[in-house]
Image (cartoon, rainbow, N blue to C red; front, side, top):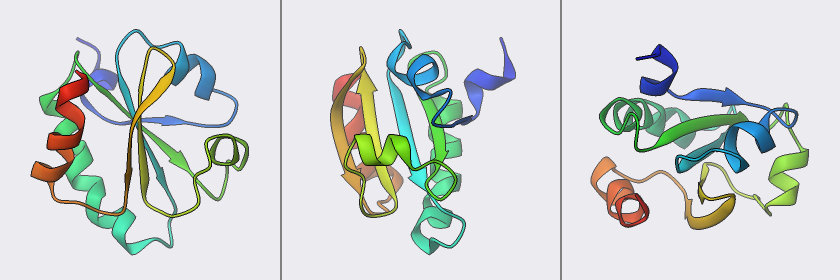
Amino acid sequence: MADVATAPITVTDATFDEAVLASDTPVLVDFWAAWCGPCRMIAPVLDEIAAEYAGKLKIAKLDYDANQAVPTRFGVLGLPTLLLFKDGEVVQQIVGAKPKRALLKDITPHL
């Protein structure tokens, strides 16, 4: 098994469509920024979810400051914002840091 599947992947404006929209596995995209405290709080939780749901769910991280096109395209205004994509469509939007249990409650119905 590739290491990539068990840890969050990094996506950019350039790689987003291929890595996220074309994925045959649901992808949870974490829109984050280095200056965002709540983004840093949920990062370890997302690492855990990536490991536990390897093969069923991909976690992708997109640096909001370095990539403006994708957040604009999907109307991301606040950070952190998590968008769950399934078959190229947004099926769930989570804004703000939440505990792991709450995140999983929102995500698992779509897996």
